[in-house]
Figure 1 (cartoon, rainbow, N blue to C red):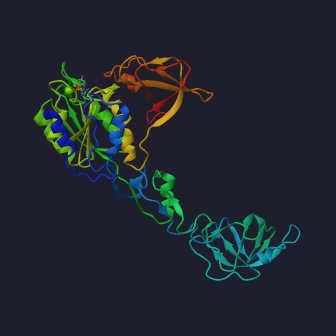
Figure 2 (cartoon, rainbow, N blue to C red):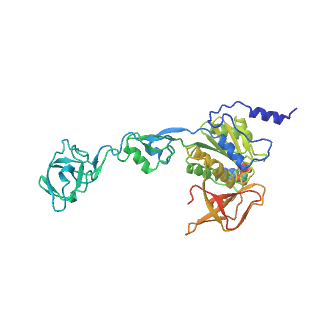
Figure 3 (cartoon, rainbow, N blue to C red):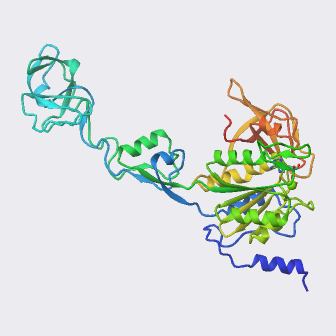
Length: 439
Ligand code: AMP
Ligand code: MG
């Protein structure tokens, strides 16, 4: 005979999965027997449940800062036509090849090729065609002599110097041929890439969709930012902070709902959020208190729990669930805890959804003092880093690490992960995680 909890769990684990995710046909969950899972397991579960990236086509300027979802091949060569690199005269090399300092040659100016107004005829032997930078090279000509290497008198030009055949000509396709790979998938579209695409006639591009996130902010004690705050209330700082963090990771917060610590209201708020967004971030109400309803509300909304509680500090109550392709994170309400969970788990996920690696910015830093984790959970310690003139990066663990102390993240440049019992000796070099906007 098995216990009813085990029976329930087996049914949950075997529920057919409607998700279309290419990574996981059904949710991949933690081993439920454990009370808390390790951070590596939590990460793996998130990666295994990572929904497919969405792709959308946007006009170039709207795509600024986004990543290409496809390889872009040149639809035409560059330059598009052979043209002059200088203001001067288009000539035939055979006419000017004997020019040296003391043996100038005089040619007849037979016309002009202006940028935008090409010469319609052919440059014949003994002729020169006046030409401006970027103008099409006339038929018959194969070389440009620069204005400063000539003397002009009425309709005749004397060539004083000719360097080599083909000089000062930009040949069709010399930069790239039609069909060549211009920008690979994953390229970040900044001003130069937009310029390049425009130059070959592309006006819109397929980019990774900015992941849509909605926030559900729980807590009866919360005052909305900007509104009066009673003595027993605290200001909701999480929603602004998380909205900003989502944006900085390339996502968009499309909705925000507030709810008190009430199961029914939390269910309503999650329901409103989950249909529009790929990711629902709920803050607060995910711990073991009597007024913590987020887990139950999520299950009632059809989410399947993938893990709850991670052996980490801060952020132990982190909850992760999935309903089809919608992911839900229950972040602890303590601002530092929620933020650290965001940085370690959600930020790389948002990157991954935009065609980048599921990864963080890391560097090696030298610790000015020894660091020890005396606790029993993996510790995300906030650090400040400083780049020395020598190029060395020094790091120190910040003093006030309380999970309610926003100052400790406002001063931080990143964090270091220290395992229980681990001691990092003074002067040792360690891998540290940097907040994306630092250095
Ligand atoms: P909870 O996770 O709901 O138990 O909340 C833990 C702590 O975080 C409590 O002190 C809450 O008042 C605080 N808290 C919860 N939500 C927020 C929020 N949106 N902004 C700032 N602090 C919060
Ligand atoms: Mg709460």
